[in-house]
Image (cartoon, rainbow, N blue to C red; front, side, top):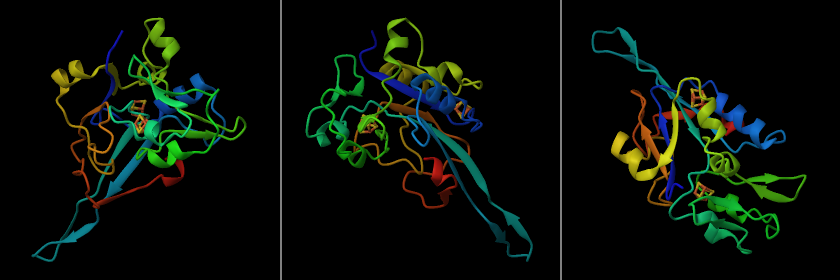
Length: 206
Ligand code: SF4
Ligand code: SF4
């Protein structure tokens, strides 16, 4: 069993098709407006006047497919007053519905807004890495669904050895907050962490 499970995203391969998001909705039978994996569309740029009076554009756009990162310092766990949110011996952060009182403190604590409120149940829900699939030796639904093979799941150290240690580009939060088990190959247009050069273009979805 993987000790420190992590997601890897090849941002250059991702086309923003959202198949991963749909596969997650389907796997978890999610109601409307609840997303355990979301694909952020981040874009910016404008026309720029050059010294010779002509114009050129510097527009850019890229996508970030993000779910819970099963962080090493999970603020959601510390925010939960009933210990419903917990990290198990396999590194999976999940919600015990027998203990969850639906206060939503975990949602407010998480800088990735990963925990989602399930209004019909009055409880929180979130990515559990498709725990049942892992037990069967399969990959999480989002990973196997991606037609571009932009997502990978595995042991954190193995993914670092393959792809390096980059964990944040705009508009992701500072990785020192929760120590996410998330690794990235940046899109060629990716803006550095903290940059305000772009905007999230699908705020209703993320
Ligand atoms: S991404 Fe958010 S919900 Fe997931 S472990 Fe980290 S702090 Fe908790
Ligand atoms: S399925 Fe793959 S290519 Fe499509 S949005 Fe998700 S990560 Fe990107």
